[in-house]
Length: 188
Length: 232
Image 1: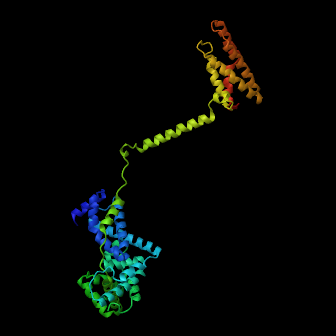
Image 2: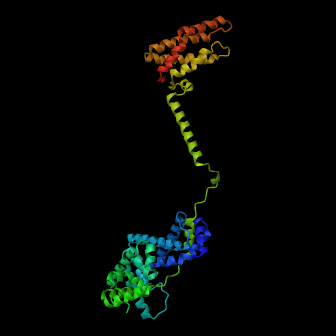
Image 3: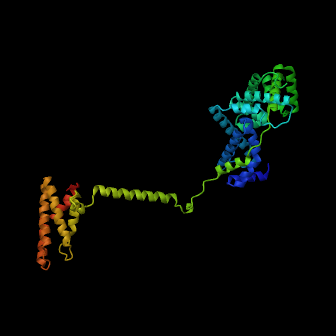
């Protein structure tokens, strides 16, 4: 744990704007990555990113946080909640189709592969994304945290505020559902 | 002791993360060799995980500066007002509010229960409120100071005029006791209006007349019992 980071959290708690900016710069990529993997598009991911830091800085003064390692976990937890809220709002507005089409077209990948390889990759993305969208919001979050953010089970449990057993159970169920819905031989 | 499927299932993710200690890992691997169900479950985890990795598009660039501007605007407290430092403490505001409420309440009650005299309105022909209580209150100093040379004759004339108005009202209400009192008061006021103060005997006689008629006592009794406003 870096002493400088502890100082940043303490300064941010006292309302220091530059300390807040430093904390934002250190954590923004991780939070944006999670938000993008979960929401599937840049606009929603930016909304989640902003909501996360606004909630964090506004509630920083009230909470008992004083160490950066806890700050990062705590921030991740706020981001997960913001993403789940965003998902709930999106579901209400039935506005989830855009992601799949965009991702299926590979519009944001920027990778250079053969046309056949790119087509296959787009197909996998489309199918996986469609499978993810059919999961409940918590199962989807568990899968994103595990397979995109590469978190360990204990870290997912800490982030989502539940037990490791509950995380494993949700992961098994989500993977079973995905396996059933994804076409066989997709990755071959 | 042989590992159960339930225990093996709980270790699969840790096995995938290579977090298991050597003996536990060896025990799990023995179980996986002998249990097709657990082995298939591990294959599923690996297969779906592999697909997810293949499906993962790189995270695009975000406009982090624009996001920061929004965050900074949202977490910045509202600016204090220019005279924020001169703002009085809360207890002072509460006390001032309570006092204002009290004063306004007293003033409203005073206007309601003791309406002001409006001679000017009466002079203009408009109806006005005149209470016998107020009349007696105005009469009291005239009766006690009648022998003073500086007494105001205009005040005595005004009392005589108002007395006639009060009498009209008492007459309409058939208030015999008030009418008798008003007669006595008129008599005394006429004596005071024409009093020759150069002769002390005259002053003494007026004082005797006031006491004989018992006007101060009657006024006190009337003010104690009569609280209604007389509309003229």
